[in-house]
Length: 284
Image 1 (cartoon, helix red, strand yellow):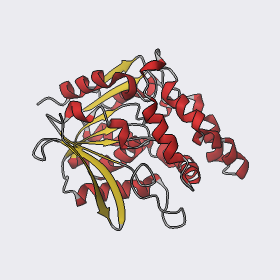
Image 2 (cartoon, one colour):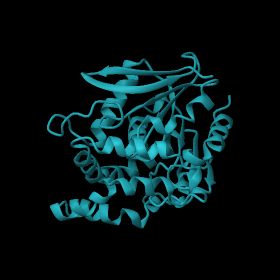
Image 3 (cartoon, one colour):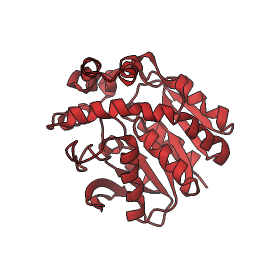
C-alpha cells in the first residue's frame, strides 16, 4: 500500500489542491495534467513511482479541486496558470525536480523550465507537444478561433467541452475500449458541468495560441540546456501527432522517444509500461 496525501496549499490567496506521495528526501517528480482533466489522471501512476520518488501532482487553477475563480477575478491564461504553479513549487520548497508533462501541462511545464532551467532535472513528455508538426488537423477549428476570435468561432469549438467529446478523447485510438475506466472521463465531465467552467475552458483554447508562439523559445531551451528528456507517446492521439515526439530529437539528440498503441490519455491503458519507462529513465 502506498500512502498518498491529499493536500491544499495557499498560493497568494488561491487554494491549490495536490496529491503527494513518497519520501520528501527522494528525487521530486511533478506531474502536470491536461485538458479537461486534473491530478486524478495520475491515480494509478503515483503508486507505481512513490517508492523511488517524491511525487507531487497539482490540479491547475480552474481544474479539479483547485479554486476556480470567476473569469472576472482571475486571468485564465497559460502564463498566469504557470505563475501559480511556479509559485506553488516555491511555497512547497521544491527547488529541484523532474517534470511529467501532458497536454496542457506541457506548456505550463515548459514555461517553468525556461524560467528556471537550473531547477529541472529531467522531463517526461507524455503527449505534451512543443512543435508545430505535432499539431494535427483536429486543431483546425481552434486555430480558426485564434485567427478570428469571433462569437461564431467560439461557438464552433464549444463541442470540445461537451460530455461526448470528453469520452471520445479518452477512447479514440484505443484498441480495446473496455480497458478505459469510466471513472476518469466521468469525473472530468462532472468538473466541466460547474457553472462557468465551459467559458473558462473556451478562454484557454483561445489563449493556447500563446503556447504555439512560444514553441521557438521552448526549442531554444531544449537546445541550450539539453535536459534529459523522455517522450512517451500514445501514437493514435487525435490532437498531438507522433511527429511532435520525434521532433524532440532535433533539439535534444539524446532524447528517448517511445510510442504506445493507444490514444491521448495513454495512462488509462498503459500505466505499467509508462511507469517502467520512467523508472528506467530516471534511474541514477
